[in-house]
Length: 160
Image (cartoon, rainbow, N blue to C red; front, side):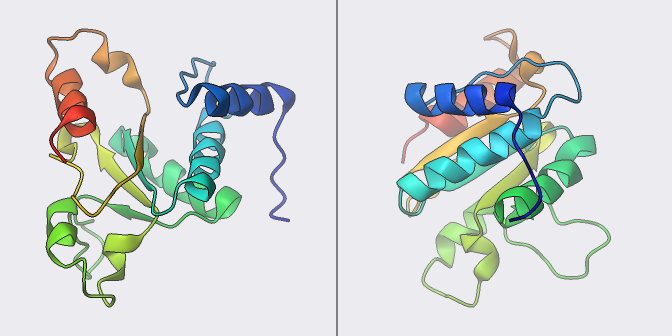
């Protein structure tokens, strides 16, 4: 037991999202949207072998996603961009596709990829058969003509 407890509104959202195989959560700040997204993604990970979880979030929320994913669900994360404070170079999605046979490249096989809205991955690597995409603060995708909307659609609908 990790000490996390889902409130009824969170349980309802997760169950509905699992039934529909998609989820839109528009709760006010502080009502646990990040936790809902992590638990929802973990449930899919248990269902679909090799599922990759892509999270696109503002830079200011990336650490919150990492902390919640690990402490609430045990999902391991990595960032698409090389963090400035770390000396170890993390692999990008494109690099992971090239080194998929090397088990020492563990960054490529972690559960969650977290990207900022400015660095949305270009594509899903061919080795990834099942994936979900979580977009935090998705109000920036209100227009089909916005660059961010086009980038997310390219990721989700692109060639595989």
